[in-house]
Amino acid sequence: MYKNHEKIKDEWNAESDEYFKGCASEREINIIMNDPSRAFPEEVFDMIKKHFPTLKGRKVLVPSSGDNMAVFAFNLLGANVTSLDIAERQLFNAKQISDRHGWENIEYIVDDSMYLNKINDDIYDLIYTSNSVHTWIFDLNCMYKNFYRVLRQNGKYIMFETHPMVRCVDEKDNKIVPVRPYGKFEPHYWSEDTAPCYYWRTQDFLNALIESEFILTHVEEFHASPKALDNFSFWYGSAEAEADNYRKFDWKLNEYEVLPEWLGLCAEK
Image 1 (cartoon, rainbow, N blue to C red):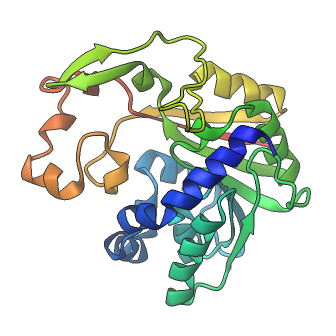
Image 2: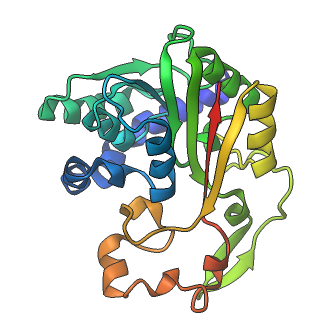
Image 3: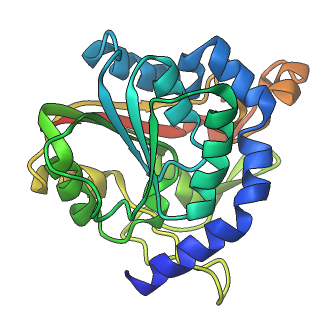
């Protein structure tokens, strides 16, 4: 395994328990149980519905499954889901939740999303990656070629990610503050001891998909929605947003909101 991936694995194993307390609390689980679509931005869920009016019996792979909210939602929508992550503790915590609720159609596999060494060819109808997965991937072509390999013919890959433009700026007092040019980013280290983050451009995603022989079918650039779960807004959690009457979603009051926050796309094998 690539040495920085060992660091990523170790960091997520160490942080997983606290991470799940915040990102997969009973509040979030109850929201998903009442409405599985809430695990996805509306624009992304529309792409899923377009290609899969029903997910019943479909095989779905969620690499770098993280908090597993998408995994739980796909399961509740009737799919047979594989939750795959490099960090064992992430999958342990997710399985504790699914076992507690009796969700049996979820398979947990410890594996690297770039290589999918434990996944056979041509078996999935859909692969889905959610926000920040690509931050930990140093070779997009490698990952996408393996996504292509394990999808069935005409299978779909659907992505939801932070829009690369907003990684170039920060926000202070509702004003945009430039922090880096929109160019080919070098790996970013938060400290000497941490694993690097990779800030890809939109063209990097698209070119890697093309080189991996995917057919790009749809792209969405969009903003956070008041209807989405807390982690789909850069600004605040839902309770705070409601109390603030969602003012920070108004670009006239918050300069940062003129930029698209999120990027979604669909590609086909």
